[in-house]
Amino acid sequence: MVSKIKGLPAVKDVSILTGTEEEQIVVVKKLPLGRAVELSHVIESVPARLREITDNSKVQEFLGGFDPDKMEAAEFGIALVEFLPTLINVALDLVIELLAVGTGLKEDLLEQIGLDEAAELLVAIFEVNNIQAIWGNFQKLRAIFRQAKPEQTEESKLKKKENKPGKNG
Image (cartoon, rainbow, N blue to C red; front, side, top):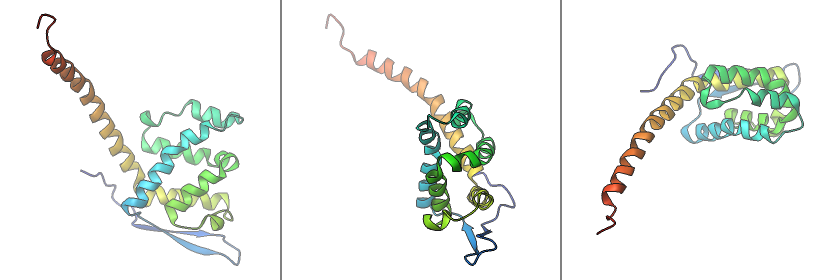
């Protein structure tokens, strides 16, 4: 059963490049499955890609308390948004990729938006696609498979013992 939070928008309008000739409204929509998978890959790559940035103490501090398997979706989202200014400074390509996949906008346009607009787009992507519920459901699935794994391991050990020919035979 898919968890659903009442009142989540199917689309969300975000104004970017406000006050410029290029000002426009971006309609952030729920992603189709293929794009949603692409977005999840980008989100999952955040910790590994940040580990590559070893020369920034803020990044290393962030990663020190960061365990996605133990974090609730809301906690991850809050941590990501709070870390966004630093993330933009040290991993702009990652932020732009996340926003490009989530909005469908071209990367060269995203390079021109402000930090406030990037944060607003990120929030819209997470809200419209109900990332919090998806994250929670994936954590539930992980827990189910982790619980099943030890039992399956014991069963397979027993089967191997039963199928093993004896020393005398």
